[in-house]
Length: 377
Length: 205
Image (tube, rainbow over all chains, first blue to last red; front, side, top):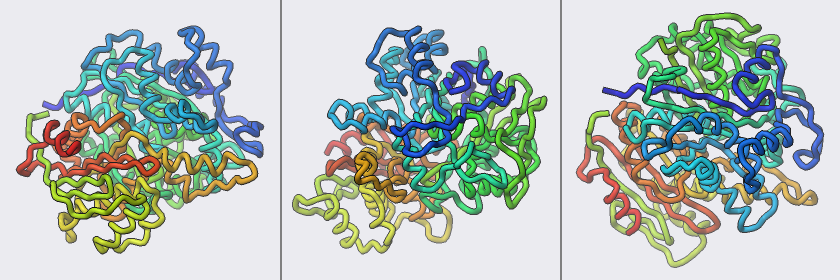
C-alpha cells in the first residue's frame, strides 16, 4: 500500500505580506511586490524587482528571537517556518528540506573564511535547522528554478519511502548583485514589470521570498493531497528550454499517470511563466500537446517576480489557497496573448471549484517539475 | 512501499588523478592539475564531444564519471529511462567564486553568461542528460558528506514507483582542485545488494 501524502500547513514571507492571508488579500487587490529600485550596490542602473524591506524583516524577526547572528535570508526562512514548526514535535521521523538556488551567495562579496563557510548551502540549512532543533540531517534541494516545487515532490517520495512521517520544507532566495548581473548578462531582464505570456513581454523581473510547508502522512488538518509528480529533463540545452516542451510534457504525463487521472480533470494550472520569450512559448506548446489549452492558467510572477528557488513552493502555497477558497487569481501583467499556440490565461479574479490543481516549473539545466494536487474531501 | 531489494550494477570512482571502475584501477596519472587530468582522461578513453571543453570543472567531473560508468550499458535503439540523482557538499561554489570575481571589481566588471549558467549545481545533470539523451527524472542535493541512506531510499522510491528503470546515483564534489566523484548504477536486478555498508566501503576505499 503506497502511503498517502498531504500538505497540512503553509506560510510565506514576501514583499506583499508576511503570512498567507495578507498575501491573498493583496493578490485579490492586484497589489504587486514589483517596484522600480535604484540601488547601485545591487545594480548600476535602475531596475524592477520584488524586494522585501529590510526593516520589515528585522522587526518581524525581533519578535521571535533576540539572536543577531543570522543572515537576512536565514531570518526570512526562519520567519516562514516559525508559525508552522512551533505547533510540532520534532523527532527522528520529522525531516527538514531546504530549497534554494543561491542561498547565502552574498557572503562571497566580502571574502573571508567565515563568509566562505556561510556560502555553503549545507551551512545555511544547518543554521536554520538548529534554530528550531531539528534532529534529522537537513536535505538541501538545489535544482535551479524548479527547486521549490521539486522539494514538494522529494518530500512526498521520502514519506512514501517510509524515511519520514512529516517533512518541513522551507524555500528561499534573495535578490542579489550576483543573480541580477547574471540574468542581465543573459539579456533576460525586463525593463518594466514582467508580463508573463503577453505579446510584449521582454523578460524576467527578479524577486525574493521564502515559503514553508509541512508535508505529512497524517490526513488530519490536511489542506491538500499530493497525488502525482514528475521531474524530467529536456536533454536539449543547458540554458534554454526545449522548443517542443519535451521535459515539461513528460513531467506532467508522469504526474498524471501516477495520479491515475486524465488531463481533462485538471481544473487549474499554476505555471512557471517567467515572461521570457522562450519559456512562456515552451509552456504553451507543452500544455497544448497534453490538451490542456482550455484549462485556466496563471503565472504569479507579476506579483512576486521570479523568486528562483522559492518560486515553486511560494506558488504552490498560493495555489493551495485557490483550491481552498475556490478562487482563480488573475495572471497579473497579462494583456494580449503572445504565444504561437493559445492557452487560457486567467484575465481576472473569478470563482471556480477546483478539484485538481497542477503546479509546474522549468529551469536552467533543462529541468522541469510537475506536481498534481487534489482537494481533500 | 514494498520491501523489494535494489542492487548496485556498476560503480566508478574518480579521485587523486585515478579512475577506479568496479573496483579496478583503469587510469592513473602522477599528481597534476584537474584541468590536465580531465583532458588526459578525455583523450585516453577516446571521447569525442567538443562541448566537454566548455564545461566547468564540476560538470567535467560528473561527465567523465558518467561516461566511463555508462560505457556499453546504454541501449542505442531505445530510450534509456535512467534517473539521475546527484549530490555534493560544495554545490557550484567553485564557479560561484569565479563568477563573483568577475563582478566584484568595478574596474574589471565582466559578467559572462557562459560562466553564470554553471553557478547552478544541477547544470551537470543537464550536460549528462544531453550527452546520453536521458529524458528522465533528475535532481541535485546538497549534504555535508556522501549520504548513502538518502541515496538508497530515493533511488528505491524511483524504481518502485516505476519512475525510472535504473538510477544513476552520484556524489560529485569539486572545489578548487579538491575533488571526488563516486557514481553507481542502481536497479532492481543485480548481484551486489544496494546497502549502506557496501556503498561506504567502496566510497572510502
